[in-house]
Length: 294
Image (tube, rainbow, N blue to C red):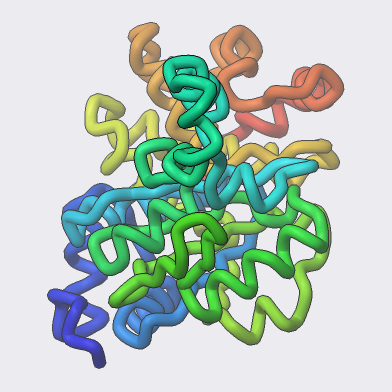
């Protein structure tokens, strides 16, 4: 161990995460504990809404570190993730210079004050004071994934105009993927890996009660059971835990005490975000709501 993790066991870490309202099972807690203790990035895969991003948020809060988030998307490149120059500020500086001195002091235009940090550079500079979240890496292309692998291997970058910038100690790193495409083996080998699935009924009820304490035990159980049935239907977008919490909160706000077909139909937009999925659910609401106690 590096000594940078303030928990002596997986159980302590698991309890700490619970205090941050994140209920991690033993397998996930073990993966987090090892990743932070051994300075290894943690790759979390699973369907959207199972709580992958929340791991990084809870971990940053638990360790009192800054959360630095790099949201990946199609077309993202190194400059958008690492650093850029503040061209508008440089242009203002050039105009303020006398023509005769502008060429002499052109190197001054590429000093630290003109550098715009993007998440990866900010994480390198923050080092062990940060948790770096690389969110939805599967949305980025192969070239960016290769670039990220290089950064994760050394946590250092050379900026031609400034020099080499390296982390004294690496930040904790959480990489998430919804698996819309397969990530490369080279990146997977660099990371510890954990798959997060939808939780079983009892755990999902506990999660709802933890994240939405105003929701009654009965309503949490009704909603979690109905969501489990929705996931078993042939829906395009299976609702995640976040949608379960949203639905339970919405019903509680409306003063609903038990979930029935009427209230389910009126509030489906809180849990299903696709028109065809809603139509399918509406056609089978008796099955979805069913025996809410079962």
